[in-house]
Image (tube, rainbow, N blue to C red; front, side, top):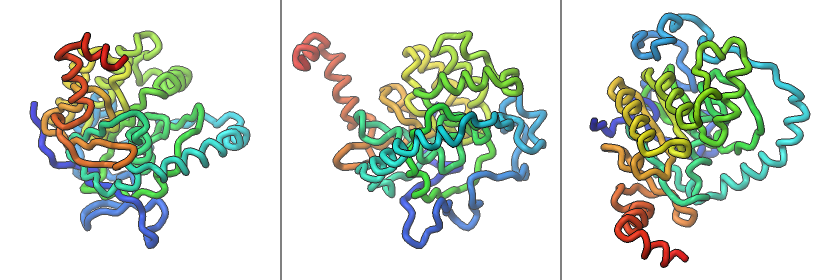
Length: 304
């Protein structure tokens, strides 16, 4: 199913100017400020996942609305402070961060590029600035296992066309911690699939089919890490159905299948040149994969 290039929610991001308030979210005259829209005006219950539709008028949002007490918060903050300082300095020095004004989002936006180019760092900052939990989840899922995210989000201005009331930030590397937090919470566990009772890939797909069905903003960081080609095809099916309802996806990936998503806006991130708009055909990874499939033996011999 083809998608359009129109971004229903997040239109673009940029680094804050000196006259921007810290954490300010900009936009056009019709776009709401802040990161959450508490009004239900203009939204139908069908815009939300089925399990949530009978609770859509309740506040706070029943999805992950409880917050487990932080254990030894002061100690954790002290342990993580050095990591945060290093992460922030590293993030601000990335060429991709210095060229963030190149990003203009579509209904599907793909961030491609080599390891270390800044894909996950940029996506993480977008997610945090949009109000999502740094280690993944919805805007109301609050947990922390090891606080290593940068403060790049504090330097971003997000420009909205419309504020989503629903969404999810999927981080492959923190999925296990998120699943454990959910399973150990007596309020949350009944509203989620039993992630630890399934394989890693099956759990990813369970999450997608239960959470990505509402109209919302979804940020996926390397979802292919747990999925076979067949699993990726199933994920693309879920994404297509959500897009047809009016959702938006921003995906950081190494997967050719996701990079080639129909009508996606594709950006290649490079450690030296930063961010540049690309096509699937022009991506360095596409060129290398095609060289490999043309002659796997010769490819390996050249690599070695």
